[in-house]
Image (cartoon, rainbow, N blue to C red):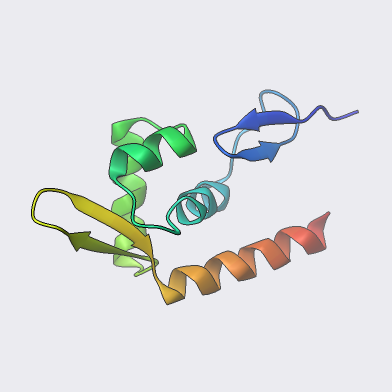
Length: 97
């Protein structure tokens, strides 16, 4: 029987299960509904600076997130394309359960 384990805002299966790349991207997008800093995303998604930087580079190139600069810091926010991706991802996960 699977035991629910809390990891970075989402519930996954048994302890030790690894998140897929799509799960990680979805976690980042889900945490980006407001304007958030990179460190907030790191803590919310349980990732290191290096890991987050790699994923953010890919996500920004895919235009799933947008970056806003308020003069002192960069803030990340989910884009329309990112919301569409997240909706499709959640539908696909629901079909697989």
